[in-house]
Image (cartoon, rainbow, N blue to C red; front, side, top):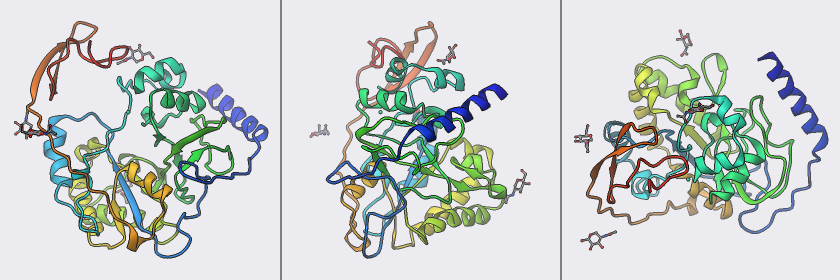
Length: 332
Ligand SMILES: *[C@@H]1O[C@H](CO)[C@@H](O)[C@H](O)[C@H]1NC(C)=O
Ligand SMILES: *[C@@H]1O[C@H](CO)[C@@H](O)[C@H](O)[C@H]1NC(C)=O
Ligand SMILES: *[C@@H]1O[C@H](CO)[C@@H](O)[C@H](O)[C@H]1NC(C)=O
Ligand SMILES: *[C@@H]1O[C@H](CO)[C@@H](O)[C@H](O)[C@H]1NC(C)=O
């Protein structure tokens, strides 16, 4: 363990020394320099917030948590939030393997198999290997790279390498090559219990009444909202609602209060990136409304996985032959 820590440190030092901060000269769409300066030069800035749920879509979670929590809400422009948009579906890998060694040692080939929609499991970005695997898998952005609560970085692309902009934190390998047009949507840390920096709400170890939890969440939003208004990505693990008393009610109150602010919008990550490409002021900002319909008549599929175990899965299309997994994402 100690050896690992030391080698990570040496690596960081070596990297900082060898990579020159290139002068970033972005223009046009899908190119944006890393930094804490808002793309809106003049006028009021909308505060965009992405709620990010990290797990597989299970009926229980969907029906009992996401639907009651989110489906009746409206943004300040009168448009519904995430519901009508359809949640944007990202990828947190196929296996979700809980071994951190698996992710730190995975080859690009393995990662492509894992990602083929983006977040690296356990926020363990593996530098250029991860980014190349995303690009090969057709993904357009990563949202796994954390930034300190005191340095609220706006989303940016990897057209230029600026190793001084977003800190490469211990345990993470950061990309050092350029990847034109590929977006990084940073996760700005929160300040948890004892002001510990934390990314996912569950990692912040905040306890209290629903009012206290809600007040803490509002403080986190207000830190950015009263400064540069960089978009926030809140990682909301469903397990937090189960493990921490009053967290569900607290989160609900928090969303209720956000709903009364005229500058706060709950949006998808894609809308954040669209705004970065076309950074309009608050009075011009409009959430996009997609008319989505679904004609799903669900079927319950009883499938065998590669180890011969039985798995159940609901599907809107006819059942696949096999349980979809690595090397066989379509279950063929
Ligand atoms: C999904 O969960 C809801 C609420 O718990 C339940 O009413 C419904 O029957 C479940 N649907 C399926 C397909 O299991
Ligand atoms: C997780 O990775 C380990 C190797 O690090 C492997 O032995 C295990 O089978 C993997 N589990 C899953 C669910 O893929
Ligand atoms: C911080 O954590 C301690 C230990 O778990 C807990 O007793 C305390 O209530 C927490 N404080 C807050 C503000 O959540
Ligand atoms: C849903 O079904 C209706 C009626 O069968 C059909 O008119 C409509 O085009 C379908 N919509 C989609 C998105 O498939």
